[in-house]
Length: 289
Image 1: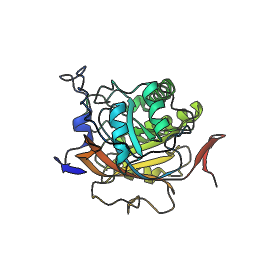
Image 2: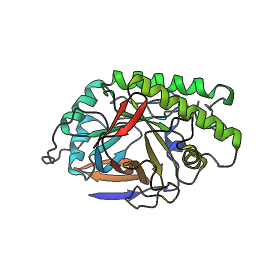
Image 3: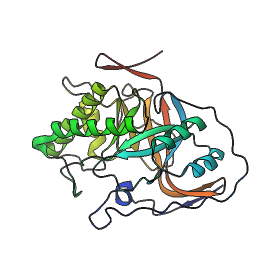
Image 4: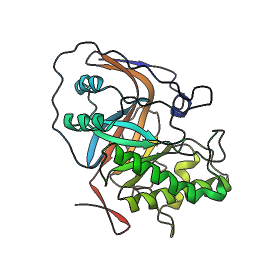
């Protein structure tokens, strides 16, 4: 196994979000060298990621089926896939219903990511309109649920909204993001899916959602996926009270680096997941015992 770090300070958005100059450009699928027999894993057919504690990775483009087989020799057993969104940064030639079924048969858990409109106080081309934030959040949830269903990602799965870094302290910006996120979560529940939120530990996204946790009228994400590239494999974060999102947390602890497993090198972000079973019922998501 080899690990090679690259530009550790680069935000995932910088390499994953489309600009007008690169829209429509496809990433080539790397050839997979021959490898020995990979470690075996039991098949999985339930909601994604479901109850899971362990390591996961995400790559800009979903790896090929052969690459995923080779990576069964890695310590990772969960993989993030970008299922859609107007700011999704890479083409997904491998991400099909058949690919999802094949990875489930190998035992991989998925954590689906949806890169929708971004905070209005950022420089992204496609941003939330504060006057239309709730409607835009519902539309994003409709699209995410449709994409998940088309891929065979079953209801009760968690569809993680990717909200990239934005600065704290802008009340208009914060209100727009929270309105968008709350509408996204509520609408996903209507579709029978759970909601997640990916955001940076040091930005306004996490601070705003912590402040809104339990607020009447606000529908919090069912899972939080926090980016903090300190290399520590834990879901504890001083910015999150211990009683919030208990056993419903992920952490992206290392960004943008190469790892090689089974003779296959992929550029990834590394994640640690600590998730108990969850279910959606009557508008409330609860942990099962």
